[in-house]
Length: 329
Image (cartoon, rainbow, N blue to C red; front, side, top):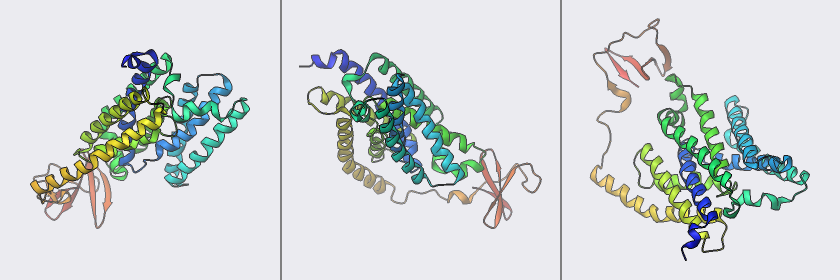
């Protein structure tokens, strides 16, 4: 009964699924924080064009998919940065253009939409050894950068304007988040499928938010939930004739449904233990005295107008003169 789990194609599927289950939520945590949960969907749609290019030229569909996915992510950030269109308009352009371009190119290659099916919805029986190693390598890059650069990426995802005023290269890190999302989509296309990959970026994060406290805890809990959903979903398909991508997504949704009531209880317990949890003073009124610096015109620190006064930036903090003391903003 359990022999099928140790067959070659199941081992390959479980390894690729585990890589996907860890990498997709790691990036998804930043996308949810940026309120760009559908970015993975947009990139997934344009990646269809990349797969079609691989089928047309005879090149590796995985390689062409990675290239087109990264190009699509850069286009999104360019549109957002130039302010010519809002983020949702940029995503809509990718949705429609990606699918239409993919179907058109596949027709030029003399193949029908059926040729794309294993990439659109995932197929564990078609995963090769090369796909597994590529998936693991790409997932390792995504996870390493997502965890190692967590302070910078969180700062940009949480408050881009504030991150920019503290001297952080917000544009660079915005592009990095989008590129990591594009690579994650490419990792997931053989297991979850391009049309469902966004679910594995978002649902485990939503599940972790039910009970995890803090961004770091949410990220690691989401990665654990994604890994569990991928392994359980693929294992289920060994015994039930069902598409792997849809099974993984439904298992992930089941995890959210189970943890949602637990999250309500956890939240009520926290409120009962600390009914008025808050800092003794609002953060913007925290007084730092004595202050080592004398801020003012020509002090050498970046000056930022803030309401009726001016903040000065140094050491990643914004300080302002209020009366006879300095406040940290």
